[in-house]
Every structure is written in structure tokens, then in C-alpha cells.
Length: 598
Image 1: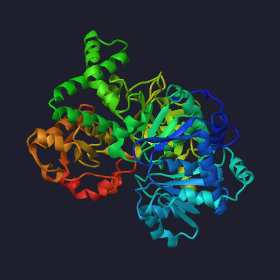
Image 2: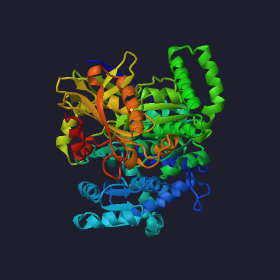
Image 3: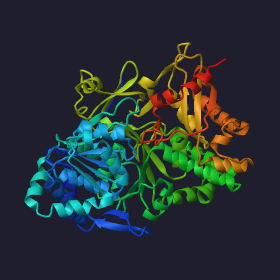
Image 4: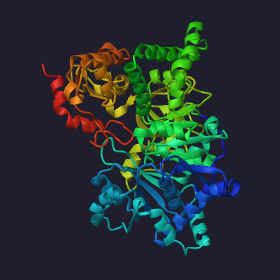
């Protein structure tokens, strides 16, 4: 049984809570630009100083107090990523309450469950669409007393409501919470079963960010540090960047408009970003497709190969002279355009939520944009491990953060201990007991390895291991990640549990398809082209590439392209774009059965 731990490197607060960062910033650097929010005219960004943010947070918090929100009570936020989300989050903490995020894409059934299970006293929605979902289920929520909406000026309404609440009253509320007190209930995205509320304390976040900000000093400590959040703040991954940015005085922006993300990056000029692997896949695939459409496909492919070779050479300690020369040429012709697309000042990205894959990791580092891949869960306040600017091993998720220990059990599962690990599931002692062993190790459900230097590699999900009829154990994630890296592929589901061989269902990226179709003299969308021989041949190449990563017995022997894609709106993907295997397996049982028909 392999075990590795990293010594604690920073002092973790034993008193106080997350609101202290806001007060300290306003006291020590009142004119510092803490946020840049989209201007009402839509033509730029308006700055918000640390002093202005404290004033806004205090005003809204007083409104919550005036509305009768008591310490420890739960207040839900159902909204896309925006400045007001962060403002309400801190206001809830100033009032001594607990934030309950709800994905803005959640169904009525999911909304009803989270509001009911958390006994939320109030909810703040983004607009009429979200208010309607809450209203539709409100009759079954006796604890829900208030529903406000950003669309109906919730910030102004609450600020006016709290005008008579004294500063001393608010300060007493703000300072009451200590590290062991609950800060938020984050409901798991539910890839399997009904979402469970993860209880994360102020101390969990203080531990996570106290360590992460120090270890990622190269990102957070530079004078012009800035990041643009575009992932859902209902997800713990985005939430720690929000809190880390406030803690480190990193200028923070928000954007929920993924379709116009690149223009927003170029105007905001972040110095680092965070994203899930699908975003990095899309950026690469879009660049590849655009190059092909312009007749420069071969040049781009060669440039990509050189970037990967250059990065691999860095790992080996020697970059061949021919690769170095080609890299210098492509840096001006190809790589510079990619770096500009992400913002001229963006040097790093943080990736999590799913495996990035070695090829993409080497590609981005090769073009001068290092993606730091990490690993964690909602239950662990996000990161347990991370690659760091001075300690990167591509293909791994890095070493345990200081103060964190990892162990590989006899059956290959990764288990952890650390101050960022949650205290349990809300009102669910049975699930809590199942998550920890008798020695206090948290069981992640993920399979992995730890090398001699302490770098962790994820190899699959314990509950997703397929066992073929021949008794071969197969981790589908390895194959799925490789197939999905192809420019035309949106999603991939590998199947074969109890079957004679491994097979796959593949969906097509609807944004990438038009350029490919035009280049091949074809017309129509996915529904018309899904069984096209040339398209099948292209996907067959993706399958062959994926099969190079596994043994013959684990290889995909048959695949089918679907005439539609799996989406978050359709219920097949989580908000962090992970495949809900149980949902897809149920909805596509006929298609899966057809793969094994003689």
C-alpha cells in the first residue's frame, strides 16, 4: 500500500472566517481594483474597488438580516456566473448564514430537492426563468420565506431593506462564524443518484486557499494578477478561485457567455484562467478546423506536433536542435495567435473536473501556455493535488498539496486526509459513514497511482470499471478521453460490461462539423451526415488512436455514431460537462444492444 504526504507549509487560521478577507482588503488597500464587471453598455469593463465591494456586501447583508435571515440558516443562489453571484455569496456570510448554490440549468425536480433538503429560508434567482422554477415548487417548501431576483434588482431591494440595520449589528453577525462553522452546502452534480449536500466549512476553504494561494504564488502574487471566471459558481472549482482571488487581491471578472468567451478574454486580459478539459479541447479543435478551412491544416498539424515534441523534450531535459528551431519559427507563425486568443497576458491555466490528457497538456505547454492540472472533488473543497509552476509532470494531477496525504488502497482506490476534506453530507449520516473508513481516510471512488516523487495519476473510476465476458477489467475513461480529443468528437461512451468485447457510442461536435463538411464537399448537419462513410472513417482514426493506449483485449472493436449530441440541457451531462453514464446507458440501451447484435 503506497502512501505519500506533503508537510504543511503555511499557517492555517484557527479563528475568523472568509469575510475577514473582504474587510482586510478594504482596510489595507481600499482603492485596489478587486473586480471588473461588464459595463451596462456592453463595451468594456467597469472597475469595483475593495472599499466599494465591502460597502455593497455590507448593504446587501443588512438586507438579509432585516428580512429575518438568522445565523446558520441557508440562502440559495440560482444564477449563472456574474458579479452579483459573488456579491451575494459574501453578503450571506456577512449575515452569518450559509450559501446553497443551485446550477442555473437545474430542473424543477432538482431545484425542489435542493431547496427542500437544505431547508433554505430564502433564494436569490437570476431572472424570471429561474424564479418560475422556484415558484413552481414553492408550495412544497414551507421553510422558503423569500425569493428575490437579480432581474428585479435584488441587490438594490435588499440594500434598501437593510438601511436601518446598524453597523454594530452586522459586525456581530459577521464575526460570529469560526473555522468549524458551515460556510456552504454544495450539492454534488449527481452523475449517479440524487445529489447530496456536501458540508464545507469556513475552515475547509481557509485551509484550501491558504495553501493553494501560497503554492500558486506565480499566478496570484504578480502585480497585475487577474482572472476571468466563466465556469458555474455553483461548482466548487470556480468557487475556490473566487475566494482565492478575493484573498490574494487578484482582479476578478465574470462571464457566463461561453459563445463569446474569446472576445471577453481578449478585452479582460486575464493573467491566468481556469477551465474544464472540454474548454481546452474546443480551443484546440477550433484552431485546427480554422486552419484547415484556410488551407493551412498541414501547417497547423505540424506546428502541433512540434509543440508536443518541444514539451516532451523539456521533460527529458534536452530539446533536439531541429525541434528547437522549428518551435521558434512556429512560435511566431502559429503559437502567437493562440496565445493572443486567450489574452496577451495569459501564461497559465488551471484545469480540473476531468482528465486533460497528455497530448493536450504537452501541446499547450509547447505553445507557451502551461495548463496546471489538479485533482479534487466537491467533498474536498476542490483541489487535493495539483501541478505547480515549478513542479509539473504532464499526464499526472500533481502532488498532494501541503498538509495533505494520499494513500492507494489494496484495490487501487485513492484515499486522502487533509484539512480541506469535508465533514460529511448534510442530513445523511449513512452516506457520510460510507465515505470514510475507520482510520478517517476519505474514499474518493477514483482509481490511481502514486509515483516515487509523489505525483498522482488517475486511472479510472472504481465503480465504472468494465469487466468483459472474458474477465478483462477495462477503465473506460482512458479510451473516452483519447477519442474525445479528436476535433470532430463531442462525447464518447465506452461500453462492454459483461460483453465479449469493448465498444463505443460517439457523438459529433456540431460546431466543428460544418468546416469539415465544407472541406469534404458535403452539406447538412449531424442528423444528415452521422452515417456518412467519410465521417465514419475520420472517427475510425480517432478510435485507432485511442486503442494505442490500451492492450488488444481492452481496445474498442466496434463503434456507432449517434445522429445527435449529449448535452447538459438534455440531462446527459453535468454542468461541468462530465458524462452522466447511468443516464446515457439508460437512454441509449437500444443503441448499445445493437452494437452486440450478430
